[in-house]
Length: 400
Image (cartoon, rainbow, N blue to C red; front, side, top):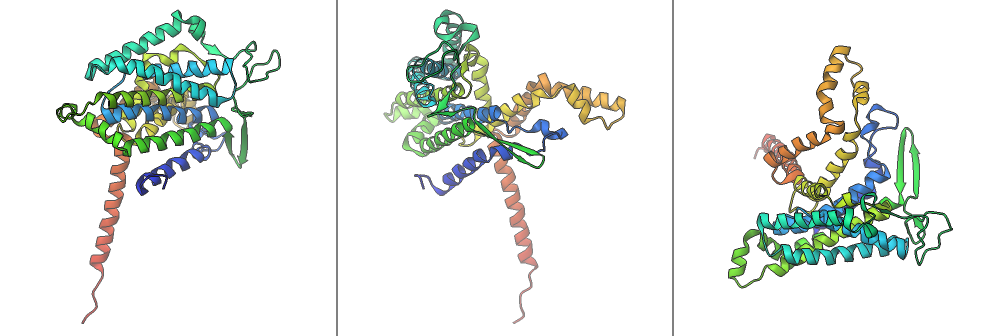
């Protein structure tokens, strides 16, 4: 169905179910309880889950299939954001044209960067992409201030008057989809639980599902097979008369367009953009997302982006006061001791926890979280098969 085999179609259905039911899945604890700190079902964070999932899916098409590691992919995220922002400031507050411009601008920029960078491979390619990203950041931060807003960034102002939007004088326009405000939300109370359904999140989630479906088609296509051949042995490809460069350039541009899509969605959900979106740490983050989830797998980058964004937004907010509330049942001396041990791994120290998790994954699960899930599934299947065989062996045969 939809051009997918049964396995891929089931995977698409699983991702669709997870995204559509996210407000319930991400709010497992009742409001007001001590564990409500771990709830992540609020619109801003859910939007970041799916948007950075798109970013990681696109990066995985380049890195996971071809093996080319880009350290400058955040440049395309930033360029797409700026393109989308100017589209909204000048033309329309409808998010679809803004997202389309973000994709196109990022694709053109990726074509230029890829044409130069792909003349080299390995660490030289990675350094070239990092150099382009840092140059882009420097241009956005200081040189191109009239276009980028410099350090303060760009946002929609009350003085903006988009060509196809009518905004009352003195009011600040809001991003919308044919009149539907991206910030529109509906809250549902169910006992002690509060579930929020946000229009912007579901629009971003639908776009993420389309992006995920497209990535499956790319992975399973002859083009995807050629990209795997590039990763496997590019020299052998050249000996057989095949030129790998057009394929790697196409993968680079597609990956850049995915980043532009994510950048356009970030602007659509939160109408502002700054140069920090292009900094090298943002590029490193998408590398971590992909490797943590499982490079070269379909769902791995989505899982990796979810884990990192969850830790960044939830784990980082746990302070000493919250820890003291959790361990208040302990004697005072023991409580202070436990808090002193745990605190370096949460709050501002959440990067330490992420680093330890990343080290454990690289050492014990080179295939990322997807490999861990597969091992657990095999373990349960093996246990069930063992139980079935034991049951059959204990059954008595009737006497003849």
